[in-house]
Image: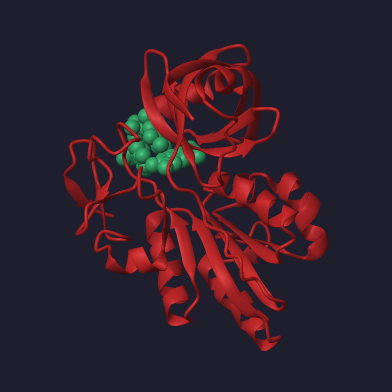
Length: 287
Ligand SMILES: Cc1cc2nc3c(=O)[nH]c(=O)nc-3n(C[C@H](O)[C@H](O)[C@H](O)COP(=O)(O)OP(=O)(O)OC[C@H]3O[C@@H](n4cnc5c(N)ncnc54)[C@H](O)[C@@H]3O)c2cc1C
């Protein structure tokens, strides 16, 4: 783990779609110098990424390998993500982390037991390392990617490479320009029905996306008694539990320390989930 901000050189920039880019860099020398042992991230962990002269923001790791090549995938939404989006190969950024808990993969995956990966509205980045890990572990899983329109589908070639063959990638678009026309949660309900008819048991749902969508998905899983994990995105300043920007009511758990991935057991007790968020001053607002 890199505890203080350290500078890395951007080695590759790849444009995924109009507003999304993946930025890669190598952390091998940093890990050797500043980490006591070689650090392998867990799917779902995030970095605090500093853009010199602009700001520092939390961004999930969208890829990493043994050679120390790490990637982040950013959507341009405001000042700092826009600045990241405009960076080129050879530019420098600061990173610290990875932080957070990451997804927990269930060990008890018997035959006829399926895992779902649900990516809502292009928030797929933290789930890519999870897909790789499940594939390596030879777990049976289905990926649902829900976007507004075909031009927003990201990582398509990447995912199709090993998922289409197994008929395990489903895409929904709100406007019907690709795949299923309608909301990804409706598509999820349809696939659930089919799989249950065929006698398959749903072992787990891993998800990431806009919180209202995640809340809807959580309610479906609760009704059908399906274990659920989701990664929450909240405003964060420090990333290591001091600033309090990302606390959830009523227990005060922090998204940066106890999360960003939460399971059904915790989400059931969390009155903020799907209903309230906090702004940069800590004030709550309805979502
Ligand atoms: C654990 C975690 C992992 C994340 N992973 C990714 C990722 O892989 N890729 C990615 O593109 N983004 C990710 N985000 C969201 C990202 O941090 C925000 O989009 C970013 O902080 C916005 O900064 P900005 O200066 O560009 O926008 P600002 O100008 O600060 O704000 C623009 C808009 O984004 C909203 N916003 C600001 N901060 C956040 C936040 N932390 N979460 C949600 N909305 C926010 C603001 O309310 C405003 O509506 C992650 C957030 C968290 C907490």
